[in-house]
Image 1 (cartoon, rainbow, N blue to C red):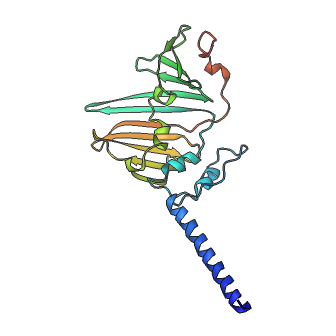
Image 2 (tube, rainbow, N blue to C red):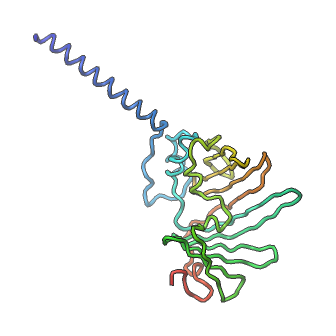
Image 3 (cartoon, one colour):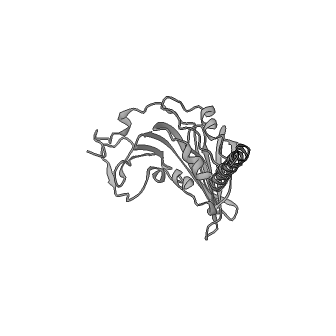
Length: 250
């Protein structure tokens, strides 16, 4: 083969290789829903919204990408905030508010009850099954509850964060990235279930926490959850002690 023909063959092979590489990359992006996951957040970075937004700027929010997008976010290991749950029924409504403290696998909920008393719930989620202790007001006696798989979110009457992350795409009616509740949120709305209920979720990009949720039945809100701005400073260890000074794992 002469030198000129060899040059043509070499150039042709190079062009073919380039085309194959482009097709592979393009095909991979189509299969992954065009998600390019950003670099992991460094240990020293804070809770700033600008940082969180930059970690989502390559993710197009839609039913196929909600799970991976929320998985990019990290809930703070330690925080406190207020949470309010409202329920609505024909001819009436009810509301309960709680102060929530979280440190690692431990959660404490101080819930104001309609009769003016305060219920304290301590949940340890670090084992195979959650450990739960409950006491009222300033009492020193407490009761251990057999909660099975009851999680801290459920103890706080909160639609679970993991439910949003793990929703099958076919169960999602709408998803987008929007401004709500004073910051950027990932919004998700589910398809109505067999009984006619649908859920709405707003997950904060800045904190990675669920900031609001609603459950609707035939276009009527029957449940609403809202949360205040979290304080992400370390929580006092005394908050996670039972009234007799022990812990749930003692």
